[in-house]
Image 1: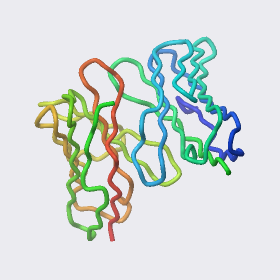
Image 2: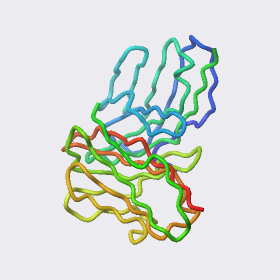
Image 3: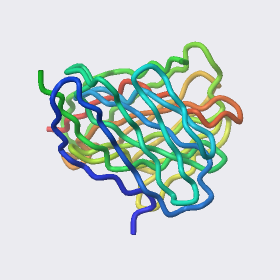
Length: 110
Length: 115
């Protein structure tokens, strides 16, 4: 079993839809949870960063962490074609070593 | 967010030669640098962890004599792929972490093609 599981998709939605991306994990020591966005042939860029459980909102993006269920989510409201990318969840305990999910390929159609 | 500059962005080399990839943290001191490798349609796999001034720690299955990592200063880490072979062709990405902060900042990646 992988430490972090993420559905690779691809996920295709119409413009304006609400997108829900999810990851599950098995290591209860994880404390830091991140979502990265990666455009084709580019390095990942940090979208959201959450410590421990709870919700965090930034513009159209909302990250949720449920440590009791070992489940994290990223919601994108009013999705745009420019949101088309691969979304990677990542998490770590203390020390900065990130474990990544496989990434979900998202396509937002105009 | 903080900036990590990675060069080159793309390199093509002949089999048997060596290639050096640089990562610089431009506006923060990266006490720890991580090097990842990403194959197409796959996630990032950690290759090694380097702390400034000490030897890198390699993940299981990563040849330390093939992938030489140097972290001589708090703003510069290098990865040298020695005696490259076509199977080393991949996307290599570095990330820097400042102090005890676990938020990682990534370089833009280097696409290595060995012919």
